[in-house]
Length: 202
Image (cartoon, rainbow, N blue to C red; front, side):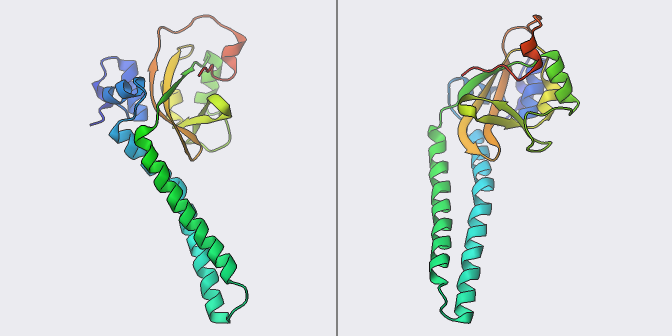
């Protein structure tokens, strides 16, 4: 059972409540593995990404086939077949992605936001991209990004290094941020770097 309030550290409890993870999830992520609860969440993410595409393409194939059946042969077979094949391929890929989840290796990266950078994000003046108010993005390797709720900005502390754990599974908007933990104490050193993008390493 996921219990964010099982942590003894108050700040860790806030982080866990925001992302909905508990000590078991954090321990597993440190070891590079997903918990059953996290696999279920990722399966939901994948369904939300693939099923709209499958339904749309299947619907278009049905419309084209019905149009051809009503109006007689007029070259509708090829586009209907291509659309149906696309829907089948998307469904197959969804199944393949779900089967890969238990073996997915959890990865980690570092995050630290300076006082100014964190402050303007909390006020909603600046976001990391334009995907909407409910998405917060942190860049990781290969130019990809992690996403989580913007509420996380309200909990993060300025100049505090964090280790964030994520799954290398592509879903809407980026890679799913699974858990996060503070590392050491806040860095009081002020630098220009703190005022820009989050520090990262992979």
